[in-house]
Image (cartoon, rainbow, N blue to C red; front, side, top):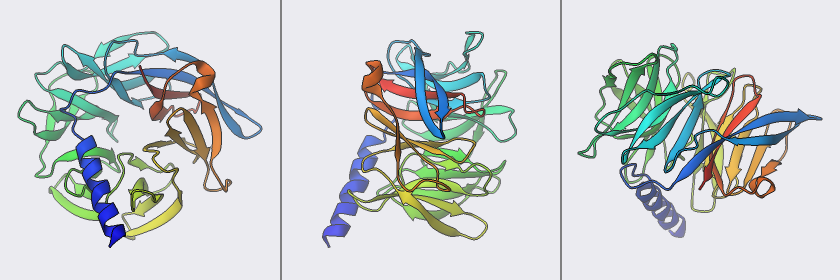
Length: 290
């Protein structure tokens, strides 16, 4: 019974924490060089990439030189595309609502994002990568976080009590529940036909799992560091995880435990949260509390 109560309390906390309409804490996106030494990763040379007052968060690389992220403008949040080589910064959206969670679509033609309307509704939309009006993807579910699996399939953190991980066929708008109480980090695993997610079994027990939509099987990858919410995969199959001021790495094919990559105190920076790694693994973007 205590385990059930803990699970329900965890779900309530998650639902309370996920409300993109609530004022967001001020954050910045720092770009680090990602290096390997004797097979171990480390971070060097941090640069404040966003350098914008207020909320700058949810970075994703488009390629090895461009990144998109959510950024605060005029009491709302819009999507910014930035080339960190040329320093060019383009505001892709400027709407009455706010946009969050930008990601390139599998065909490379759009940047998708969650649109939070003034009435509190949340929908997934696709913006042409060169600019233009969004294409709304209809859904009866309230989509929180998500990742693309292929051109028609999206895996979604569906807001609810409790929240759920669901497979979403965007062509016929059908949803399939995979598991309850997922974390917000959903990713396609490199070179596999699977996705990963953090399963919050209870307040104290979190796992990183994979899901194979072809076999409908959930597989255990490793135990997650308690309270660590944000993770991302690099192209070599290494997963990076942030835990307050520390960032860790783990490669399922070679590691038995988490390896410390960096401590933000080394750089006089505050807590880290969301992460993104460039396709060539030369850069890692880290969201840092202001």
